[in-house]
Length: 262
Length: 221
Image (tube, rainbow over all chains, first blue to last red; front, side, top):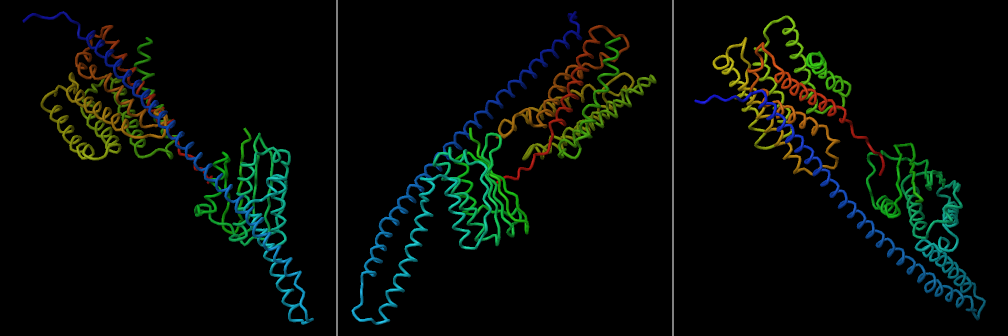
C-alpha cells in the first residue's frame, strides 16, 4: 500500500478551521434571522395595536357624538316641553279660591322644577357644554362644585397647569374629563370617602394629573378591571396617556395619569 | 513562553469567570443555569486536579475517561430540562448507554491509561452534544420569543456548547497523537486552537450568567 506524506496535524488544523468558520457563520446567520423575525413580529403587533387604537378612537368619538345629540335633544325638546308645561300651569287660574287647587298648582310646579333640574343635569352629564365653550378647567370646577353641593364628597382641586389645559384639543379634554368623572363616580359609589384631591401639574413636557381619595382603598393585586376601569384605560390609551395606581386596604386610592404633550 | 502562560494559566483560570458571575447572580438563576454553574464548578475542579497531577508529573490521562461520563451526564441533564416530548425520554437511556460505553472503552479498548486517552468516547460525546445543540436551535426557531436572541441566557449557553464541541471535535479525535512527548509547532497550534475554544466557551457561559436577570415587576394598570 502506498504511504501518504500528509501531516495529520496540518489536516486537523484545516478541518478545525473549516468547522469554526461553519459554526460561527451558522450562529451569526441564525441570530440575524431570529432578530429579523422578531422585528417583523413586533412591527405586526404594533400595526395591530395601532389599528385597535384607531377602532377604539372611532367608537369613543361616535359615542361622544351620540351623547351630544341625546343631551341636546333632551335639553332642547324635553326641556322646552317641560318649560311650556310650567307656563301653562302658571297661566291656570282657578275660578274659586279653593285651597285645594292652589295646592295642586304648587305641587305641580315643584315637580316640574325638579324635572327641569334633572333633565339639565342629565343633559349636562351627557354632553358638558361648559367643556366645549369654557374649557376643561372650568368644566372640572363646575363638576366638582356640583358634587360639593351634594355633600357626598369634598373635593380639593388644584390647577397648576391652567395654560396647558387651555391648549388641549377637544377630544383630549373630553377624554380627561370623562376619566375624572369616572374616578369621582367610583369614589362616591364605592370608596366611602369624605375627601378627595385633584391636582394638575406640568412636568417634563407632560401633563400630570394626580387624583387621590381617603376612602377604604383596596388590595392592588385584587383590582379587577371592571367596566369603569376599562373605560378609563380605553380613553387613556386613545390619547397615549399612561397611568399608575397605588392603593391598599384602608389607605385610600391614588392614581397618577401622565399625558405626554409631544 | 507566551503560549505557555496562555495554555497553563490564562485559559484554565478563565473558568473562574462563569463561576464568579454565576455565584454573584445565584439567586436569579433558574434550574438550567444552576446546572451550568454546577458544570463549571465540576470542570473547574477536575481541571485543577489535572493541573496538580501534571505539575507533579503524575499521569492524569485516566481522569479523562471518567470525566467524560459526568460531563456528558451534566450536559444531558441541562438539555433534558430544555426539551419536551420524545427527546426528553431518549436522553436518560442515552446517558446510561454512553456511561457503559465509556467503561467498556476504559477496561477493554483504550485501556493503556498511561498513553491513551478516550478519543473514541470523547468524539462520540461531541457528536451527541452537537446534536443536542442543533436540536435546541431548531426548537428555538419554532418558538415565538418576545426578546432579542442576545438577551436570552440559554442561547449563549447553547452557542458555547456548539462552538466548543464542534471546534474541538477533530482535536478530540486525534488527541492520542498529541500526548506524545515530542511536541512540534503544529501540535502547539492545535492546542492553541483548543484552548481558545475553551476560553470562548467560558466567556460565553459568563455572558449567559450576566444576561440572566429577574424581570422587573411593573405595577401599572
